[in-house]
Image 1 (cartoon, rainbow, N blue to C red):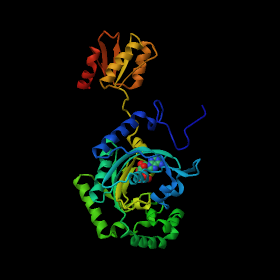
Image 2: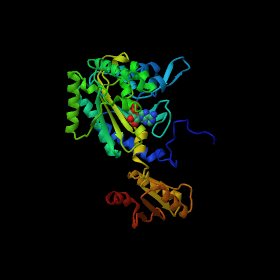
Image 3: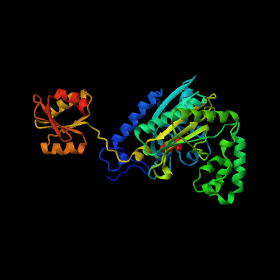
Image 4: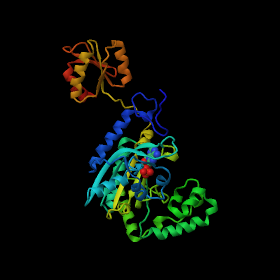
Length: 409
Ligand code: AMP
């Protein structure tokens, strides 16, 4: 077969050789996400994978690289300009406004996003984000709660070397004056900065702070957090105080600006410090009080979070987890194994067996390959089964297997 997945994409399928394609780890990360999102009160939210291009131009912002360089945009057969969503927030805020949303509202999403990037490990053209949006929420505790959800989830799934970085980007009250100050500083150093940064000075000077190449020349750049208005300073202080009360460690990072234009006040990123530095952000988010208005809605303050599942998979390394609990080896034919599997599955176990009537030896090989911790050998439906786990072997009626496994393993 000559077809491969398109550049910058990959398959998640059983039997693939790269660890990132392991279905079991994806399943468990997405399942665990639902559990944590619900614990924090975020119901499932689904919006289209494509939206009108203008939504992203206005919502994400015309100076962000995501909009200027990375969107998958095409004209549909009706002549509309359509874009595959490069991020989740603009669509969710649109959906909230269309639903006539009033009052505090929460939603959690999970799905593929699309950006035309230069593909490399941890950077794909189709990638999976899970995230939440908390809308019509203005108070700093909303920020803290969203950050806590990300932190608890990433800790629960076991991302090694997790670090939370935090900054405040100010608001329309204090940011404009700061940007003038920053632009002046950057213009004074124009000849030292890279070409991309020079281009950004007039469009979005904050993004220059993000540039790894220019970093050495910007060590004494003015910082937003030294220039916050009273309201933004109080907000930021309050977020930090709550995080401390929640025992969530953070590093204040005055260079943290994030790639999308819509952020105000709180901005944060979760870093997997054991990942390659260029792609070590496993998630991020912040407050976007102006977004709803920029897409034509009423003023709706909000705060959100998006985690990159592909990178979390990479951070966790190759998965050891098995996808099934029990493999049945039947000496009395596949028909018996089908019925025995049905009993155990209804008891809640994850079970597999060979439907093709292969030899007992071949079935044992399949059991080993399956990674199941338990192999169950049966010689007929009316006979007790032989349960093999680790080094031990026990004989018991089929009906007792799940209770025994729950009690012992
Ligand atoms: P952003 O929407 O840019 O704030 O991204 C949020 C998170 O999504 C990042 O921290 C990454 O973990 C992940 N992410 C963003 N772009 C990509 C990409 N091209 N490939 C894989 N993951 C990505």
